[in-house]
Length: 113
Length: 117
Image (tube, rainbow over all chains, first blue to last red; front, side):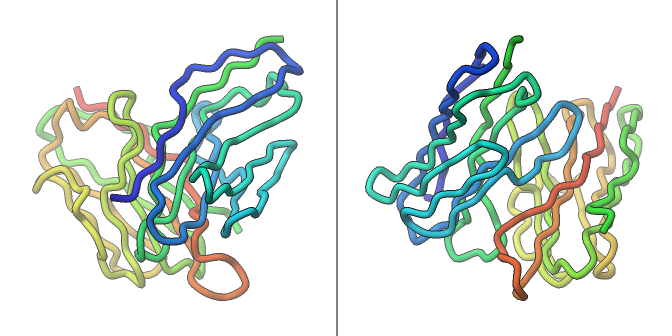
């Protein structure tokens, strides 16, 4: 069935390091793809999204490109900051169920000064 | 808009008690979702509504859990009787339908942290 797999954390980086968090999805249908971020003690917030192949979502210096050939949507940032410390969730729309999303298990990122 | 509003933010109760969690979605959103988040199981979808009608409740753990949406601006998730294994953070999210904004994006509330002793 439909699913999303993301790299397990935690990921610990130094400030200004390059970040990649891998995400792959099952190739059923034509899903929209998302990255959500959860800061400590808060709910999930949409970080970026892409709705079709080759689209690039971007926000706050983060980017992810919808790669149909590799069924991937990896999250990248060129220079992380301490304030980026959070849990990141990859998600896809679920089959033909409009509005419903399937989330990955989340990757915790810690950025050290 | 104030965003998705959940209450209470924290709830501590004893095993066997009834717990009611509340959610006010963003005005105009036609979809409402209830999730549960734990360290062990991650983020789980419990149930979701479209235009106040439950569409999929297959994620509801057992009969102790029930959810209602009596109108477009209010939903409840009830646990009766509560058990220690129900301790988790419960999130409500809403999503728009049609219009100029994608139907896919979900907007989350701040969550209710439930502790059952």
